[in-house]
Figure (cartoon, rainbow, N blue to C red):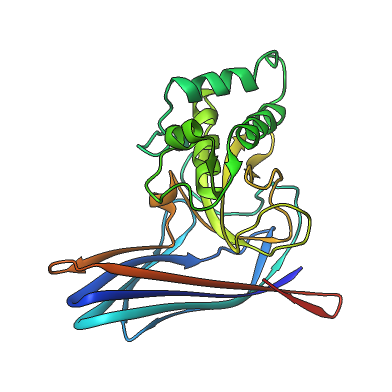
Length: 279
């Protein structure tokens, strides 16, 4: 599948700020699952600085804006050719060992309820393969947290989402990472894009899911929010320990920080069999 993506992030401030510094993780890596045909990140009115590839294989670039300013826009445009590899991440270059992703953070730290969910999901599976165990964990999260936008916040933890029983893709990913860690399986948070289809499942064009390390296969993606593994509809952007660590944009406001208003617009167009479908 060939996907065309336009991702616009706008920040507005009630009062002028002296400046902004951003760390941008907005470049998808070329691998067997996806081939980058074109990609451009524009920091309107800003200056771009150092750029490097981190140990997880993600490109990170710094951008700065000098004030006073009351708004700024970051725009991403590109085309990606995707291939369905049944959720298995192949050909992705990275240096961080899988064991590093057994690390807990505040958002994925397991409480008693998450530990119990992990245990119930894997009950009777002592001799099962790592892949079957990972699928069982993903199904457990899908069943325990119903997809319902507007009920959780960006800072909501996995334990809070499980307690409330509702959440969005971020909450499903955090919960899956948490219970995978309980089962001593490395797991990480992944950001990206999803082209919607009319299959009855909820979708968000700007999306997130989890990857679990399966020794015989490597990293395998699990989208518990949509009860599937990433396929040709998905574009993988970057990864991290949790949503904060994997965030496509992280910023610092110079001077007293006024009220901030964030607007995000994502459009994913799929070109398939001569037809173009828009999300």
